[in-house]
Length: 268
Image 1 (cartoon, rainbow, N blue to C red):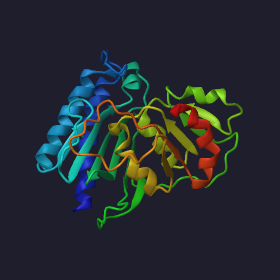
Image 2 (spheres, rainbow, N blue to C red):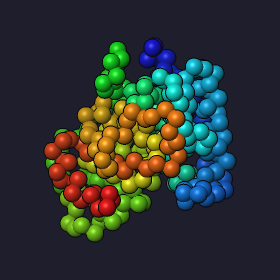
Image 3 (cartoon, one colour):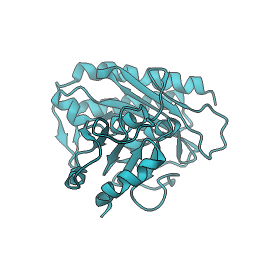
């Protein structure tokens, strides 16, 4: 495995798609999917384009994508695509949305790349975990190393919510200021970058988290599933289209006892 080639491919593919999406930003009509989320022709085009690029460059790798195939394939290596994370922001003209690619080995993410064209930020990371792979380890934003914050909570630190987790606000006082960004990947990546102390996603799908998983952990943050059992490895032949993965990410282990009781309401 040539990891520089993997990084170069992910960068080139997401940046190329991002340039076209910027042309459509705020200009396309959105339709509602069965789960209540929005989709545009731009989502579908980006999904098809990324699938085509992967099939050409990595013909032996599996692919799971938001807009087409949700069944996890049997290949050792698989790319998971979120062609446009933050479609509501994209359709309404709010400049926080992105494109993500996660690379899984035997069902577990080991590399992730997330590109946010409007704010010109690109995150990537390598996390071998228990894979046994010889590979780099680290998390980066625009090529610079990032790390989770060592700070204690205060009224001048941030914690991110998603739109489906606002019930947490009923538990006052909350130890940090609250932010809501509308993009699952970026929501969690701000913890990896040291900008926030924690973030929660109540109903993320596998394409929302596959690319973020290795970046967050390589940055030293803690990933805490809010349902029993591990998220990874994924199981070949299983359909992940309708399955959510409630998740809490915090910047350091000591903050689990601070935030986990407050987000427990989401798993009830």
